Length: 464
Image 1 (cartoon, rainbow, N blue to C red):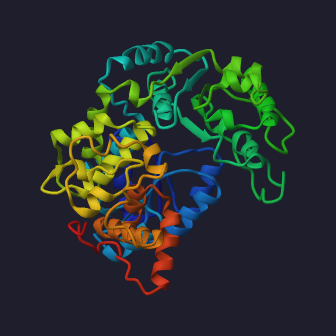
Image 2 (cartoon, helix red, strand yellow; image 1 turned 60 degrees about the vertical axis):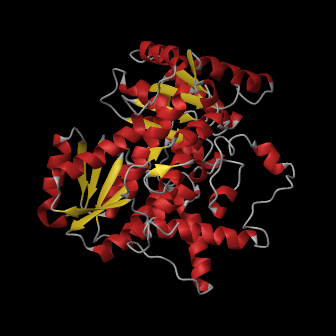
């Protein structure tokens, strides 16, 4: 765990850093946002940023986003300071921690980030050979290609391999090849020199250099353009890279992992992926089964996410009724673990009397009729209705929604969720399955139309 602390915090910063070190974190400190960005550009790296709430948290979050540095930001300040905490969360911070720092709270924050990254929840026997293979190859430096459907946990598996490797004490760096345009991905991977192109106002260390001595994950590598694949092949073969605009090759020592939700052999046959690069990456292939192939994991994953989101939202941990368990077991889970996580997040917020019943489980493709009408669903009713039926023209529209526009229903769902989350934009966006930027844009439209918007700390968990 790498923690970057930004700010002075009237001397409390040293205490927070000491507590983090005692919890096993590697701690770095910068006095201001500019210093933090300089350190991150130089490849220092971090898994979490704790920033003084007196700083411009919004500017920090915007800087991280504009430079495609994906890091959670936690604001911290002297005392509760609800107004400052609300401003920080609206600006993009995940949470607010009051200071002087509490050892248990600091440890809990670090543990939550570490668990989110490395937790491999399983019970089904089908996962045993997969994990056995991962543990066998983890101590080596062999490249590993992790394949499987979207949402099966490929990045979690990559972090698991890193944690079991001889490089576990070094950095784990991940880059999503599908999320970055081709013209920027080369710079992200290999870095660039000042003046290498328009907008390159300073030197930027790429992911290969940042991961030196550690592990580099190329997430969704099948989305990489063939032109860039050629340069990547040289980096993999020679273990050296050239910064964009640079004049000297730079040696790197990394363990390379890659993921793909596509069949790369088929992509090679189509000419969309280089065969030589495929063989370089595919020294070992770990194929993750879909959630449909590991049914015994459905309930244990559901319970894991119920606990996680009950704690995150400050509510009592609800229990699953037998009928709700049957509903979960009957569903197809096209989105795999990611889908069940989102489903249980919603269910925690919709639960009544500390129980999750079938009507609280809003499954993909089943609409909102059961919850909207307040009528309990029979066991497995929602799961028995596949997405194809919902989209193929069912003659039973959701009762209670007929006559309303999609925009009206969407607005009420967003505002009810935000109200339930006590105005916390981040939590609401996660539950709704949209980005925080999309949520803010929607709320701006509603506010301009005269609709009252819950502010952080406002709302009622019983509202929905």
